[in-house]
Image 1 (tube, rainbow, N blue to C red):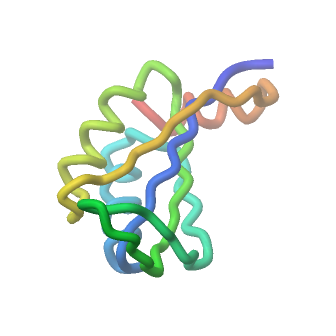
Image 2 (cartoon, rainbow, N blue to C red):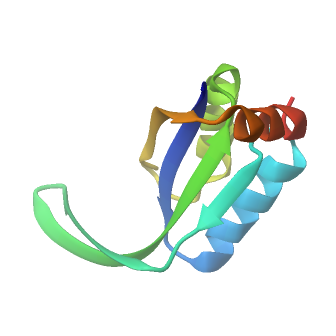
Length: 104
């Protein structure tokens, strides 16, 4: 078993999600980006309850690329305050080898 870094990030539009996903994949910072179905987000912003439809993306990368991927997503993200959540996951050796082979 090996570890993989997962990033969960929401975007205002599918086009924004695809742009960021395509960019970080082309730059080899992630091996995969799963663009998920739109979701309804409820959150507090400046003391007010907000509701928005967002498009979540799950990025997969090597743990050693976590800082670079986080910084790049933040730079590309159109939000004033992008929420970029990450955690590690245990995966099989074949999956880890694939992610390692597709990133640098």
